[in-house]
Length: 628
Image 1 (cartoon, rainbow, N blue to C red):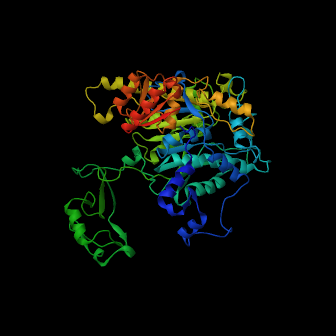
Image 2 (image 1 turned 60 degrees about the horizontal axis):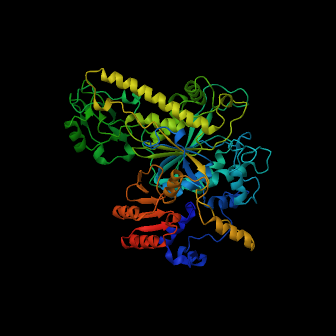
Image 3 (image 1 turned 90 degrees about the vertical axis):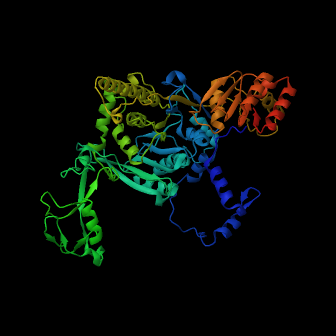
């Protein structure tokens, strides 16, 4: 089977092939035919508004190269591995995004990322020379020190402002990751990106190019601190969160009502329909018709005309119907200016989101740091974490619901994972996928001195501690509820999924065919000998199961069942023969009647007849059968 990851451009080509088959010739696009098909909607000039920078085409090339890597499970670092549906992946995020393409294409509801801001002092991955080959880049990505950690010298580059390609380097880092991320979003998916003044202008242009200017939703202003900054001429208290939808299907919804909003609903006349608020029963005269200008008689007999420049919101007939239905409020004495009742249970119960995210509503860097210090027993493991209240606010804005996936591929201190678990106290099962590189912490940092060598270790420990804290709080609530005589079903506290599966980016469990330059006979012979057994020395059954299900398009939460001699993935979706190939095993698989079977070729070694019969039997019942 093909060991490469799925690529976004392949999906686009297939979509174009279905839409416009006439522009393809022998599998390739014929540009002349495409121009004819598009007619006048083709710009033949080079003079156009476009975002360009040094290294852009090379960054595209790196993005379009498929990955042969895989993800291996790390059960000992996980919490409740076999039952949880939350995922934490340790590894270089662009390669991880490539590995996830086939299994998670179009499945993610929301993405939140907090990437490097390109302040001139941060380090991140980008090609250190624009002629860098894919092989050189991957060699750097895989560069480890003696303890197996990613090295700053080999992989990360400090992008100083004196660098002539200062902005280009940052764009070369961001562009391929955003393209790959977009393909993982559902059609109604939404992405949020935290950023500051250093690159917000370039990020807007880049997002317009990738997501489309028509899918821009908002540039939120986040009040990151409440204290004055005295180091600069202007005290900067704000950062930004850009929001885009994947397509026109993406929607930003209403926020849950806070206590202040709910407090506006009263019931002074004891209306059996419950709490209500009211709006004026008048409208601007310029928008009215003749039927909206009349004398209205109140229940107490007072005659009212609409104020100058206004008209009644309803016609006389409709107004009388509303009065009869007790939907018009004339004040407690029945002589006041009429107002239209809006009942709490009838309307959309929520608040329209605002672009200003205040410190009071979503927290600050300082409040997030205090929370993290408390969680880590007084240790400041992260300098500028994002508050979980900010991430939770964004999750609520785009209505992430039961079963939806939230992705964060710059996980950092893992506020996204924490926010998802916190929100799931409402009984819903939102799921997260967090990705973080095993980047070394600075040796001078409190985190390093406390034993956390990498950012990924901080991420995982934060999720463990946050889960334990949430569990303890819920157990206390449940104990209180047990002591009550009765409580409503909507008040029942539910224990959410507080576990997470840990996976690590790794080389494939299957040997990769090398491109040999020239005609060196010995090299070719050695490579052929190596492939007599295509399994690598360090491969394990568990690792092979996850690699094969990923490359078959199954997700990391697939239901895996180990049976005698084989593994079933999601029931009949996929069967993996990795341990033995006997007639008994094959007969059992045939009874299962799966959609697809993948077997190790070496299991049939010395028994060609069994392999031939297996191929024929699978074909007879319509089962796709492949060997490795």
